[in-house]
Length: 146
Image 1 (cartoon, one colour):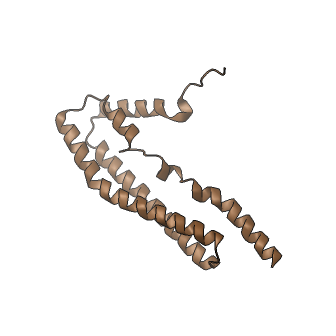
Image 2: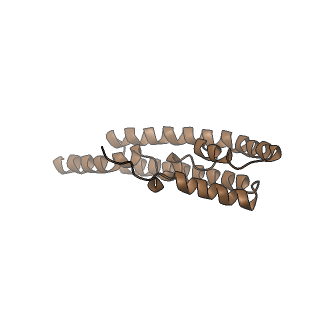
Image 3: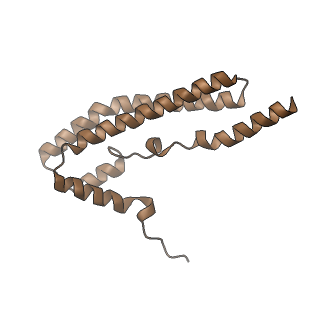
């Protein structure tokens, strides 16, 4: 009994950080997020391009929000199951559901990115890529230590 409890505690302890932190594909707003929209403001978009980009965003927004909500719920259920009395089979099943929803959300983001990309000119795509590269946290110059 003690071995089983200890094993469960170790598993819960090792998985809980993974459940609390969403993978980059979920956490990062990516294309269509606030940072991406801020980058678009610097691309000299035509009114038609702005209208088409907004239409793409609206097309995917509902599906993405619904999937995000389902993912949030499934993760909360998984956390409860890990600390409760659920069987390993039930926990594995819930984990598979979480993974499936993460993949679904990533696919929606990718499809919306492709749709938005098709609206931009090659020059605008290059300028956007450069802006996004410069804004990545790993590429920012370090602040001097005080």
